[in-house]
Image (tube, rainbow, N blue to C red):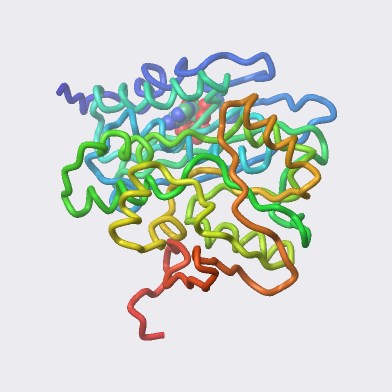
Length: 330
Ligand code: ADP
Ligand code: MG
């Protein structure tokens, strides 16, 4: 692996970042000045979100740089998806322990391949030296007033999720325990290369009453919808869509916490009135993303997870929280 430590910040920007993504017509000025100049079309509003990934906290330090480049953009696009916004631009703040040309090249490849899929342009950033940490801010476009928020769920609405839940959490556990299994590549794919549900979010504009992306586990993230909307919900655990790997692991452990509170799924959870059920089925077919009805919004308090026999299952942990005290003495 070639290491160049002589490279300047200026060279780094020119060599790697300047032409990393496509050029959009709505970018009046991109990388190279003190700020980018961007044109928001009339009648549209801007959705803005930022996320940081820190080595050892959000990813294993041995993650491949191209997976990391993909993931840091994907987790941000997942937030835009949850708002129903169409990705447009991004900025990238990179803190690197050193300059390794091969590593940066691979990181840029992972980032730019995903960016190209959404015609997203990297328009600026910052490059500093220090412990590995990456911050991406994304900007997306929405027709005025059409954003999907957490606060619109109504009593009687159905609750849906896209895709399957628990795969990334299972990957994390297997990796941590050094378990070698046949399906590890697929599971690790869900952890390291999540697919943001951008098309689903856009298609649900005008139908969904609320939406959120599942980054901290279904219980925690659906909990945010319930709190913002001032409603409660029941979820039928046996309706939650599972991959064969997660279903097999559940059979063995009988522990739902991986699925309900595991996190890193980057699927969407959304609500809408039952009158839209056919619409959801046709959107799901059109974009090729499964959308499964898992529960109902009601007027009781909080979230109730129902086991197949109708009894209540209560999660010990509802999701990952930074700075939370987990030593149980509070
Ligand atoms: P300033 O000192 O004015 O903040 P910099 O020297 O940090 O400018 O950056 C010069 C240009 O390169 C700016 O347009 C900035 O947005 C861009 N840039 C710096 N680092 C990155 C990066 N990691 N990714 C994309 N653009 C970057
Ligand atoms: Mg700077």
